[in-house]
Amino acid sequence: MNEAYFQLQWPSEGLALSGFAHQVMNYRYHWHQNEYELSILLGGSQEFCLDRQSYFLEEDDVILIGPGTGHASFGRQADTCALVFHISQEAFKPFARKGCAFQFPHSPSGAETREAPRYCRIRFYAAQICEAALSHGPFSDLTARASAQLLLATMCTMFDHQTVRAVTEQDKEPMEAMRGLITYMEQHYREKITLDELAAYSGYNRTYISTLFKNTIGVNFYEYLTRLRLQQAIQDLTVTSKNLTDIALDNGFPDLKSFNARFKEVLHRSPSQYRSILSPDQIVTSGKRRLISEDHPLLTRKLAEYLRLPSTKTSP
View (cartoon, rainbow, N blue to C red):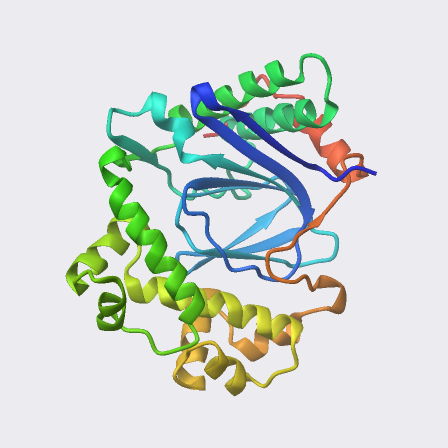
């Protein structure tokens, strides 16, 4: 039985995307540095936490998450499943002015908007891509590529977006520097790390490092460090029996109070409240997903529904 997962690339067009259908489990706090994430809830109920806000998605709701945006989701009931796409930033390069890129709002749908034309079209093209990619037929690539382009066109024309500066060839050296700094932080996030220490390690001054984080990742140094710590702390809460103080200290938080405050700020509940809502069958380890099969009844049914694009929608 094959899992509902695929990767598609058309290098000549700078277009790359991957997709999968999975069962939404416990929170996985993460971010995608150079990709947009498009998530469609196939069934169940889901909580999304991003940019210090919570969004509650129901069946057929759509949410778009920009590159570099820290986010986490949680299945609010059993058998909550979603269809997810990761789309490369480069995919939008042909549509943007030279040296620029698009930044989309999160644009979650809700009860009043989920049947609006733009969300119907998003689901329609997403279903076409998924069906073509999983069918492996003689025209699968042609269908998937055309549908991917129409998906991008829908995002560009039916969703408000801002134009921001894109990474260019001149940015390669700063990006290499950034990768070195990130690697160091991933190895030492449990320790006390300061901008001065990072400057001493890298040979760059602290002002340059601070600017580098903001320009290449979109968040400052301390925010990124806290993300790393929180990411692993959530994993420890989920799969270990450590007490909260040990989890806080083991992951670089100075004390339990600061850990509680940051956790609440991002996930809108305390670490102990999060732990209390975990079910044994809802637990997955960091970096893993519980993919559903490509012939899963829910996926098959929802793809068929999404491919029946309504022709007379009047809602905004």
